Image 1 (tube, rainbow, N blue to C red):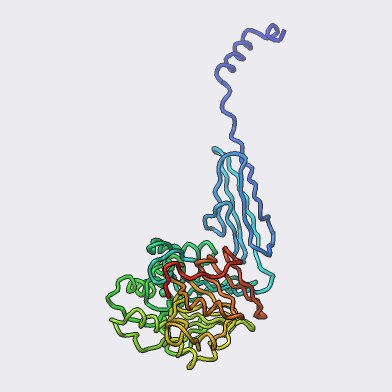
Image 2 (cartoon, protein in one colour):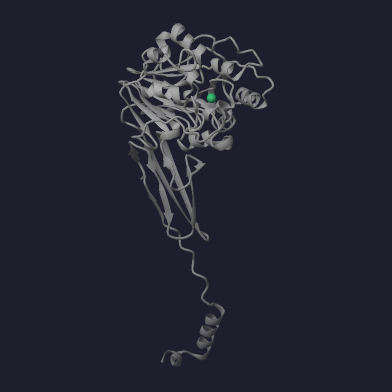
Length: 403
Ligand SMILES: [Zn+2]
């Protein structure tokens, strides 16, 4: 009917139009962006995890201008803007979500001992992160960064852990002494994270390349390099008088042929306080260091809440004679909590651990049994210890320890 009513010319025009305009590809449809975990204008009183999806095409996301991967958790308090740009062919879409993360809960001081695994050398190494977490943000300090794993195979481990915890700046990095199980992870840390103060004990060891690389990297990367000669307050946290470093025993510092024990005796000690809580970190200090800390720096070391036991729980870090028997150091420090970084192989030693386990007022934790150990401290000084595994198990001596 229709065709019959058209003129021949109109029919020709219609047919030409049909044949010259085949159906083209459909216009691309703009993607729909879905973001969960945060919404525009939202304020969050805890870390947030952000999920992003699009119904078609692909997207990229930035957080305050830096690339952001979906599934990422934002744990640092602050003001943020998430920008998601999606594209499907030539069609695009964009979502902009400003939000705020804040911590309104109690301020918490956190001490974390990282489990560095089954290091054969040096008893297991140390790596201790101290965090002051408040409504304003988190601030961090690091004591030592040993390598992780058998044969110290993973020097980048501590840097990775710090980045995983959202550490973007370190108020201080302190190297207790010039042994690789304490410094071999420091270059990756210094290269990855801005550091304000680098603090070390001044040990020379001019012929040890790895150590010299740590010092040269610190000089180029840290704002300030400090060798303390008096008790020095560390730049850390939001509360004055929270962290102090004790100058080292000077006896062996400049001796390039100093033995391992002599290097240990030059360990920096660190005091941390919050409310009624106090903690002393003894590096790898042995008999001479303990005696000096006990007699010359008693106000920082007596009756502490927590003690980072020296030298991976070695006998020479506990006993007056370095082997067994009496321990003026444990009687003086009288810790409620003792924490040991150890490989579970050579350390902790049997006698030292028995002395700690024999104290009814001391709870002892070892990275070799308990994995990562964290102490969380409120402003009041109330604290709680959490461990990664085996919470109900006692510390055990190293499997190859004989004394
Ligand atoms: Zn050590």
